[in-house]
Length: 88
Image 1 (spheres, rainbow, N blue to C red):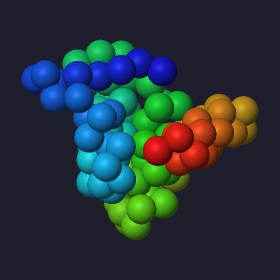
Image 2 (image 1 turned 90 degrees about the horizontal axis):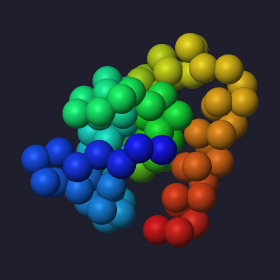
Image 3 (image 1 turned 90 degrees about the vertical axis):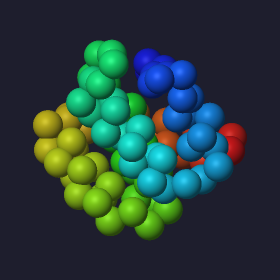
């Protein structure tokens, strides 16, 4: 998965704090390809993590992405989210 640093702000490091809004923002960054290529697996992962932390809008965006993903892509994104949870 790609790593985005926007205006020298490392959102992935900020997400390690567990802030659902930052996780949601990362989902948007990856989904839209802002400052890089779009990565729907990474977007789904971050939306999933934000939803897990209680962000209702992230639940909606995650479901929108899941509609265009196949089952193996969804499973891969979910594994990435679980792995992130266990390491942070």
